[in-house]
Image (cartoon, rainbow, N blue to C red; front, side, top):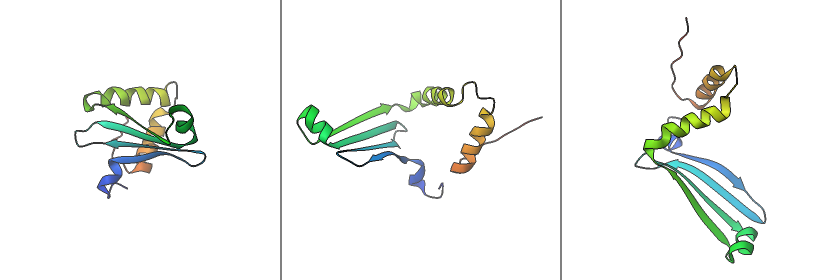
Length: 103
C-alpha cells in the first residue's frame, strides 16, 4: 500500500448506491490539510434542495491535525486496555511505520 504514493493521500470512506447515492472521500491536500468531500446524488437532495445532487466539504487545516488525531484515538481506544496492541495491529495492517518499546 505505501508503495503507491497516492494511497497515503486519499481514502474512499463511503460508497452507497440506491435511490440516494452517497460518496465520501478523505484526502490530504498539497498544503497538508485533511479534506473530506462528499456528494449525495438522487432522491434525497432532489426532495430537500430541488436538485439532483449535493456536494459538501469539511477541511481540517494541517496545524489542527494533531488535535484531530488525539480526538480520534480517544474515541477509538478510551478505556481499552489493549489500545497499544490494537494500534500496533492497525499500523502493521496498513504498512505504517511505528516504533514499539518495552522493558
